[in-house]
Length: 131
Image 1 (cartoon, helix red, strand yellow):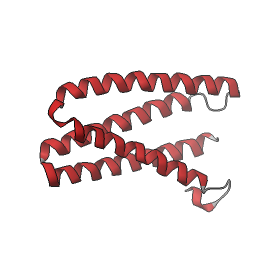
Image 2: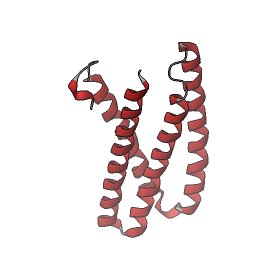
Image 3: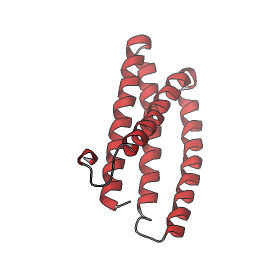
Protein backbone atom coordinates (compact mmCIF):
# COMPACT_ATOMS: atom_id res chain seq x y z
CA UNK A 1 0.00 0.00 0.00
CA UNK A 2 1.34 3.43 -0.91
CA UNK A 3 2.24 5.65 2.06
CA UNK A 4 -0.15 8.45 1.05
CA UNK A 5 -3.06 6.03 0.68
CA UNK A 6 -2.20 4.44 4.03
CA UNK A 7 -2.15 7.87 5.70
CA UNK A 8 -5.50 8.84 4.15
CA UNK A 9 -7.06 5.58 5.26
CA UNK A 10 -5.79 5.97 8.81
CA UNK A 11 -6.96 9.60 8.97
CA UNK A 12 -10.40 8.51 7.75
CA UNK A 13 -10.48 5.68 10.30
CA UNK A 14 -9.54 8.00 13.17
CA UNK A 15 -12.24 10.50 12.13
CA UNK A 16 -14.89 7.78 12.01
CA UNK A 17 -13.76 6.45 15.37
CA UNK A 18 -14.01 9.93 16.87
CA UNK A 19 -17.50 10.43 15.40
CA UNK A 20 -18.76 7.07 16.64
CA UNK A 21 -17.25 7.68 20.08
CA UNK A 22 -18.92 11.07 20.18
CA UNK A 23 -22.24 9.50 19.20
CA UNK A 24 -21.89 6.95 22.01
CA UNK A 25 -21.10 9.75 24.45
CA UNK A 26 -24.15 11.74 23.35
CA UNK A 27 -26.33 8.65 23.75
CA UNK A 28 -25.03 8.08 27.27
CA UNK A 29 -25.43 11.77 28.10
CA UNK A 30 -29.11 11.50 27.18
CA UNK A 31 -29.81 8.26 29.04
CA UNK A 32 -27.30 8.27 31.90
CA UNK A 33 -25.85 11.68 32.48
CA UNK A 34 -22.46 13.34 32.34
CA UNK A 35 -20.50 10.61 34.16
CA UNK A 36 -21.64 7.90 31.77
CA UNK A 37 -21.03 10.18 28.80
CA UNK A 38 -17.48 10.85 29.95
CA UNK A 39 -16.93 7.12 30.48
CA UNK A 40 -18.03 6.41 26.90
CA UNK A 41 -15.67 9.12 25.64
CA UNK A 42 -12.81 7.57 27.61
CA UNK A 43 -13.56 4.16 26.07
CA UNK A 44 -13.55 5.73 22.63
CA UNK A 45 -10.31 7.54 23.41
CA UNK A 46 -8.69 4.21 24.26
CA UNK A 47 -9.66 2.85 20.84
CA UNK A 48 -8.44 5.98 19.07
CA UNK A 49 -5.09 5.96 20.89
CA UNK A 50 -4.60 2.27 20.13
CA UNK A 51 -5.37 2.85 16.45
CA UNK A 52 -3.03 5.84 16.20
CA UNK A 53 -0.12 4.11 17.95
CA UNK A 54 -0.54 0.95 15.87
CA UNK A 55 -0.81 2.93 12.63
CA UNK A 56 2.37 4.85 13.43
CA UNK A 57 4.29 1.69 14.18
CA UNK A 58 3.01 -0.10 11.06
CA UNK A 59 3.41 3.01 8.91
CA UNK A 60 7.11 3.19 9.70
CA UNK A 61 7.59 -0.16 7.96
CA UNK A 62 5.88 0.80 4.70
CA UNK A 63 8.18 0.47 1.72
CA UNK A 64 10.30 -2.24 3.31
CA UNK A 65 10.38 -5.82 2.13
CA UNK A 66 7.41 -8.03 2.96
CA UNK A 67 9.16 -9.92 5.75
CA UNK A 68 10.07 -6.68 7.56
CA UNK A 69 6.54 -5.31 7.13
CA UNK A 70 4.96 -8.47 8.52
CA UNK A 71 7.35 -8.46 11.49
CA UNK A 72 6.54 -4.77 12.14
CA UNK A 73 2.82 -5.55 11.95
CA UNK A 74 3.07 -8.35 14.52
CA UNK A 75 5.20 -6.19 16.84
CA UNK A 76 2.67 -3.36 16.52
CA UNK A 77 -0.22 -5.69 17.32
CA UNK A 78 1.60 -7.13 20.36
CA UNK A 79 2.30 -3.60 21.59
CA UNK A 80 -1.35 -2.67 20.97
CA UNK A 81 -2.52 -5.61 23.07
CA UNK A 82 -0.16 -4.76 25.95
CA UNK A 83 -1.13 -1.08 25.82
CA UNK A 84 -4.84 -1.99 25.72
CA UNK A 85 -4.48 -4.09 28.86
CA UNK A 86 -2.67 -1.27 30.67
CA UNK A 87 -5.20 1.37 29.60
CA UNK A 88 -8.22 -0.75 30.46
CA UNK A 89 -6.81 -1.61 33.90
CA UNK A 90 -6.25 2.09 34.63
CA UNK A 91 -9.68 3.09 33.32
CA UNK A 92 -11.40 0.21 35.13
CA UNK A 93 -10.07 1.61 38.39
CA UNK A 94 -11.13 5.21 37.62
CA UNK A 95 -14.53 4.33 36.14
CA UNK A 96 -15.38 1.16 38.07
CA UNK A 97 -19.04 2.11 38.37
CA UNK A 98 -19.30 3.09 34.70
CA UNK A 99 -17.35 0.36 32.93
CA UNK A 100 -20.30 -0.52 30.65
CA UNK A 101 -20.21 2.88 28.93
CA UNK A 102 -16.39 2.60 28.70
CA UNK A 103 -16.77 -0.66 26.80
CA UNK A 104 -19.51 0.75 24.56
CA UNK A 105 -17.26 3.71 23.69
CA UNK A 106 -14.43 1.33 22.85
CA UNK A 107 -16.67 -0.98 20.82
CA UNK A 108 -17.76 2.06 18.79
CA UNK A 109 -14.14 2.39 17.64
CA UNK A 110 -14.07 -1.28 16.67
CA UNK A 111 -17.15 -0.75 14.51
CA UNK A 112 -15.11 1.83 12.61
CA UNK A 113 -12.69 -0.95 11.58
CA UNK A 114 -15.59 -2.86 10.02
CA UNK A 115 -16.66 0.26 8.15
CA UNK A 116 -13.09 0.82 6.96
CA UNK A 117 -12.80 -2.76 5.72
CA UNK A 118 -16.06 -2.39 3.81
CA UNK A 119 -14.87 0.91 2.37
CA UNK A 120 -11.55 -0.59 1.26
CA UNK A 121 -13.28 -3.64 -0.22
CA UNK A 122 -15.37 -1.39 -2.48
CA UNK A 123 -12.46 0.73 -3.68
CA UNK A 124 -10.44 -0.23 -6.69
CA UNK A 125 -6.99 1.18 -7.42
CA UNK A 126 -7.31 4.49 -9.24
CA UNK A 127 -10.97 4.79 -8.31
CA UNK A 128 -12.39 8.25 -7.68
CA UNK A 129 -13.94 6.85 -4.46
CA UNK A 130 -10.53 6.76 -2.75
CA UNK A 131 -10.77 10.35 -1.47
